[in-house]
Image (cartoon, rainbow, N blue to C red; front, side):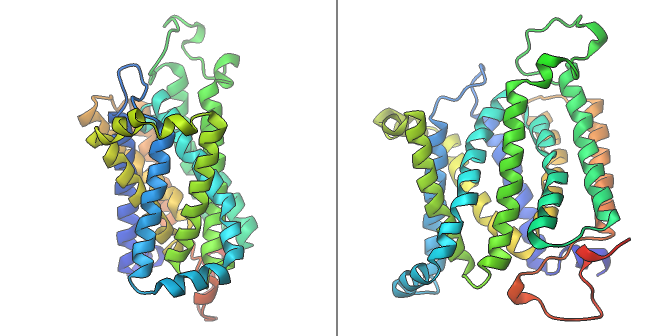
Length: 357
């Protein structure tokens, strides 16, 4: 099967890869479609995130109880309570990430949003090496850096005025670009993107660490249950911190959500994203997940061009080309990172993450 078999060890893992991309592309489009003309939302976004976590929890419980009894569920919770506690870290970070998604998609178009998030690529490589104690090869690092360059190309365009959503600046700004200007360098939305990048990177790598190392003996759906219970607690805390705990569950807030089919679609699509992400990290790895996210850029740009009439400019085309080159380079030497209880000693097949090229 060549490189395809190295990247995707099973047919199921390839299906998971495609499903992951499709669901996240759809999520960005659904959230963008739910915005008003003033780039705001007519519903409580934190309530939507909390409802999503509840749907994820219910789905995970149904999938777990399909093959296990309630007594087994209780026994596993007690037996693996330490893992339940460890999931508070990624749960909190994912909670913050999900809420920042609405804030940042209100400030950026979907293609720019995804490209900016790709700054997480190189940082993911660093955290991956630290947590899994695996050294990435030169080809793997080169592909990650090339992927980041694609993001910088789009970022230059965003700050030069090529892709603006809310701009009151004069087009005659000196030099024709504000990329290096002091006020744009510390733009609040760019800081929100950087915070979302950190949440995505650390939560993703740490979640894979729990799935494949610390909690590798725990059933996947049980791990999802741990994650979503912790996440619901974190979201309730977030509502309390914002002072929205009462208003989030008011009659008007509930009606604002359930009276809009598009918002209901956001909830169920986001829930599917969460379940598929756990399958992705269990069968593949967080490095490949960053490449899947980068591939979303191409399809998101094309779909948003058709649906929202958001233009695909030359910067986007060049960035997509660079990202594609990075993906091709990575495919020449993909990372293999199996769960601790799935590793089979085979001296003829060295760990790809440790190879030097």
